[in-house]
Structures are given as structure tokens and as C-alpha cells.
Amino acid sequence: MDINRFKKRGYVKRPTYIEPLKNLSNVLNKNVNLFIKRDDMLESGGNKTRKLDYLIADAIEKGCDTLITCGAVQSNHCRITLSWANLEKLDCHLIIEERVKDSYKEDANGNNFLFHLMGAKSIAMVPGKSDVMKAMEEKAEELKKEGKKPYIVPGGGSNGIGALGYSSCALEIMEQLTKESLDIDTIVVPSGSSGTHAGMAVALKALNSKIKLVGINVSRPTEVQKDVVFKVAQEHIDVLGLDKNILKKDDLICIDDYVGDGYSLKTEGMKEAVELFAREESILLDPVYTGKVGDGFLDLIRKDYFKAGSNVLFLHTGGSIALYAYLNYFKD
Ligand SMILES: *Cc1c(COP(=O)(O)O)cnc(C)c1O
Image (tube, rainbow, N blue to C red; front, side):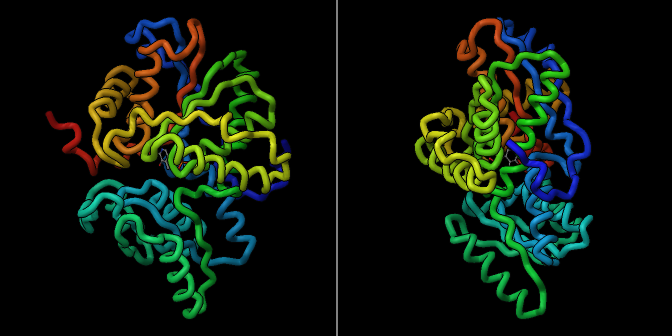
């Protein structure tokens, strides 16, 4: 799998650390060794940086001067896109989808505060289940009339190009494991807009790796989520020019037991996972993504889902800034 031929901006300057979760391993007291990959420590904070490294390179190559993207009311993706746009001297326009009714507040804390602080050129809110791509296309038309050259970054940066961020991450992990003589059996990843899950799934297949990849859903039921991941994976396989058949839909693992009532809504398991990681490892998860994935990770360990003696790697994709917008989730 040759990905060096794809242009990137170089946002990922060094591999993010893989570290043992010693305290958590002890507290859980199961015969599994836990490790974490700290993609929360990427510059601008989280997994979207890896995808934007390739997407913004594409935008700049196409001569664009403006980014348009979309996300939920506390979108990490919107905030991270805005930060890289600022550094690249590109304009950035945000379309915010109010997935949970009445949850958009112009003066909300967390990522929303940063949309304003970091100076998004415009922020428009659309109701949940709107055709957000259409809203972005309309915005693009409007900006073109003003002489701008807009580039639409899809939600979560998840398409065939954005997924390069996570196939390259899989290569990075393999190299680290070789250097550190670490034999990882399973990697646990979030499964949302799915550039992360799809990129890793395609790369592990292309590398013929025996590592099992477990996706934990953050919003959708398993059958729907598998379709979402598979679609991005196929686009990615196309971009890489690989054989269509290297990945089958049935190869994908998506677990929907930790979503609760829906995207960004509180679950008790999420709260416990965020607290446990904070207290045992001084690592901040977030309420929308990594808290739910952390809940799944811990629950699967407790249920002996991973074989005895195995080494399991949790991919921490960032998001802790959203904690400050969901303080009420952690009271009582
Ligand atoms: C976007 C996001 C995810 C989900 O990644 P996808 O590639 O969209 O599936 C997970 N964690 C955090 C913190 C995110 O911001």
C-alpha cells in the first residue's frame, strides 16, 4: 500500500505516542493489557487533523481559498477545520446541524465558543436531518458569486481522501509496534462519520494484518453504521487503486451497545468511563465520542470479549473540549 504519492500538508509532524494504561489495567484486574494511542495529542487536538492533512492539501492544489464544512453543535471537526484554515490563511464557513432539537445555543461553551473566538467567517444553523450537503453547496454558490473559490469538506472529513489520514495512521501504528516490539491483538476505534474506522479497516486489510479492528458506534444502529463505513471504505479503496474485494462488509465490526438514546446524549456508562480515565490515567475523554467508545472498551474487557493475555489498543481521537459544554452530564 503506497500512500506517499498523495499530497499532504504535514500537520502530523511525529507519530502520536502509544502508551500502556497501567492503572486502568490494574483496576480492571483482567488478564488483558491495555494500551492507548494518543491521537488526542495531535496538533489542533484530535483525529480530524489527520484527515484534514490530505483534504486541505487537495483544496490548495485545486486553487481554493475557502473551506466550507459542517458538523453538530459541538463539532470537533468544525473547530479543527477552522484552526487549520486560520493557519493556512483560508476562509472558513460552518454549517451547524442541530441534531438534538433545541440544543444549539449561540453562546454555548466548548467548541461553539471556539468557533467564535477563532473567527469563523460565517456560522449557519440548520435543523437536524436537513440535507447538509445541499446547504454547503448553496453556500459554495453564494461565495462563488463573491469571487471566492470554495472547497467543501464533507462532514467529519470522511470520504475517500480524508480516510488517507487513518490508513496512514495504521501504517504509523505498524511501524511503532515493530520498533517497540509490541504485539497488539485488537484495536478499538470510534465509528462515526467513519473516515477513521474505514481508513484503518482498509489499511489493515491491505497490509494483511492479523490485528482485529473493533468499531464502537457513536450514533447509529449496527446495520446502518456498517453501510456508512463500507461506503467510505470503498471510496478509499478507489482512491488507493486497490482491489475492490480486499474488504467485505461482513469483515467490519460495529458495536452499537453504547450509543444510548442517540448521538451526543448522556449515558451512565459514558459518564463512568470519562471519570475512570480521568481518575486513573489523567486522560480526558469527551462525552460525545471517546466517552462512549471508552464505555464500550471497558465493558468489553469486563465481559472477557478479548482473549486472555491479549494486548488491546484504544485509539483516543480527542474531543475533550466538548466536556466544557456538557457540565450537566457530570453533576450528580
Ligand atoms: C469525529 C470524531 C470521532 C469520530 O471519527 P469518525 O472518523 O467521524 O468516525 C471520534 N472522536 C472524536 C473526538 C471526534 O471528533
